[in-house]
Image 1 (cartoon, rainbow, N blue to C red):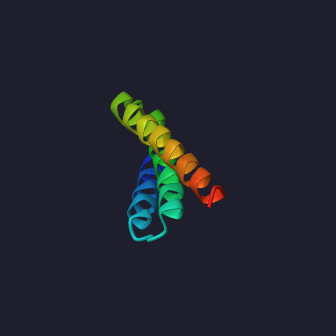
Image 2: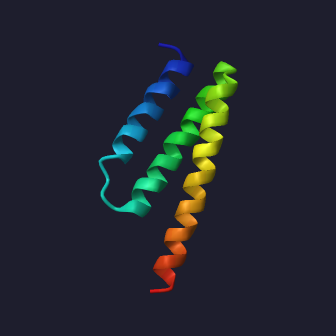
Length: 75
């Protein structure tokens, strides 16, 4: 198994694991880590579609995490 496959499998398990988390802040944080790993995979593989998708997912997760943190602080 090469480095590309290892990164891909780790990213896959992190993303799958994120969906098992009930706490929305933790779910989004773990999913952000998974998307970051998928971005690394895309960079190594030279796949612009994977890079684009995961940059978008990462931006969405960062935006949502910031919203959740603001909501938590304002309570």
